[in-house]
Image 1: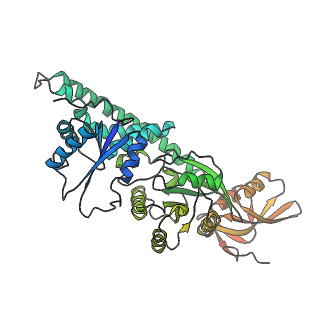
Image 2: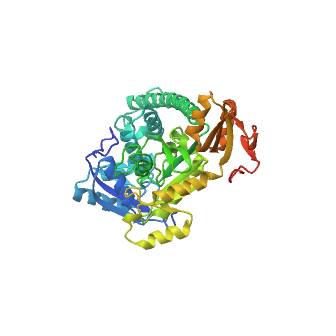
Image 3: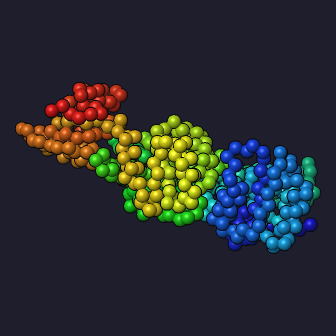
Length: 448
């Protein structure tokens, strides 16, 4: 029996049949069992020509599908002249091998397709390292399947076949490569932690959300960053940070991050922790939701699960209901608003609701600011520039070579102001906690 070629795991320019096995009571099951998988397949470069769904209490241990469905799938492949079968499930190496032998066609699971997309979209060295690690960790237990054409040769104690020898050598090579990649990624992560952590004195806001929810479009609308935007899954893999000036509030750092997805492979979450360092150290998260999607509630849950894995679920969050101009059924928006009454409804593409979003972000961050007066020596240009860059100046006056600046300042800037020899006139600064204990200055107007 002919065996499908496994020398590459991509699906570019191939005709694909989609398969989904739905288990009863599955959490986060989307309304359309193939909507997201179709998007993944087309993003990876395949042409979807057909689909097959089966509802089972438990997947078949050997082939995931039942015997009858396997025969039905084989017939469908012949009719449609398909080159590849893509499952919306994660299969074991044995299940994939058994299916390929039965239907004589290449079989990929959901994780493999996601990894392929990530590999094609990675642009920076950091992203490439992380994708390569995730791919190797996925491939390691599957090497036997990839070397099936050699492992059929006779072998045993003292008489091992060349297939088995090559398989063991490949495993050692992959193991060594994984160790090396983990070492490099650890260095990247340490550098990233230092880089992000060094941004003291500035508020950091990270945009998170389901893939293709409009995060990069929102980033461009708020900052004019010119971030690449495409109506495809995982258009953004590399975090970008830009300055965002909020009127009557101040300047913050806004970061666009990689999109999340249902059943995101754990290896990818682990590998991309360096990239997601912006999320872990953010003061506030903007959770962007595609309000036009019928699966919006399930997508919110999927994002929250990934945030749990990152240890970021408890961070202050503003829910942003995006694409409100694309909603065909307004009841969808009503349901989301009822579930998330504090959410802000916007259209990033249509630039609708951005003023309300700025106000919501300012309100969420306001408790981290103080209104105060700072005495600065007139010749201390470094501190004056720092206050101008990081605070909102209300007024200034000059007295005997001293500048008295009345301003709104982020609390985390207090330590730096002191290091630059500033004096707080209206507050007693607790340096240990980096807080200003008020004398009628915190969270309100200064005394006359």
